[in-house]
Length: 347
Image (cartoon, rainbow, N blue to C red; front, side):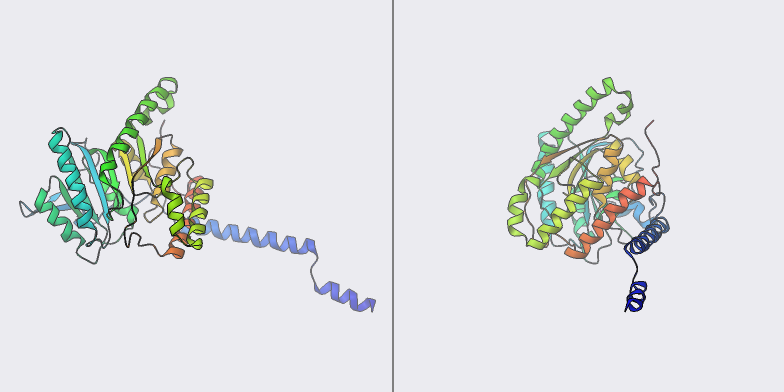
């Protein structure tokens, strides 16, 4: 009997042996994950563009014209960047509201100059044609269409729009019309406050003087969260809270709504951040704000009006949330391990 017990005990590992095996397996997994992070990453973001993406069409002259170099000084007050993918139905409504606001404001204040850049992110519908109708109506000085050669993702579309702009202030806004242009003043007021705070900080801290011209104001839907939860399923609410927790833990502190598509940036901040941003899909906002906070760029959040629009998201709920969660983890790890590089650092 004793002999049988000895044989049985020899067949099963001890607790220490199990722990050792788990330790080796975990180490092997970590090594594989680090190799994956290196093998699937490029040190610097790709800022190149297809030849066709260097031009916009001018309906008046019926010719293609070159977008300006993003390193040129600004010639307008405001550039509005509208990333659009298969938005032929919702874009006309959004543009009507936007142009009505912008035109009225310019009439009231002739010093207010603007442009709208619609970035067609490789759409398969008539999104570019809808944009060109606005360009024909208002002129290519006010409305330009940047049609991407292939789909880059929302972050990639916003990036190319930003780097094709002429504005001193740059606003990116979703094409669905969920946010209202009448709330732009809220972001502008927030920007004034940020710049004043930056000037005061610069008086006592020389290290942040170069960041003084850089600032971001994020529109926020956080104040509407209680109502939105009541309309969501328990599973989607769980995913939302999980996403917010991971973002706060790993990347961005102090901003409740990182994903709202209504953000205002100074030109200096936009050029620096979008030239260094690596994520081009849904989690690009987190990448943008992570870099901003890492470099001490002023960031604030202001409440805006927002309404649910039918078909408002193109995200596949579970899969897209998992992709975003993966991207957020990779954002923190790849920057921390030096896998992703920054082209220019503050001295």
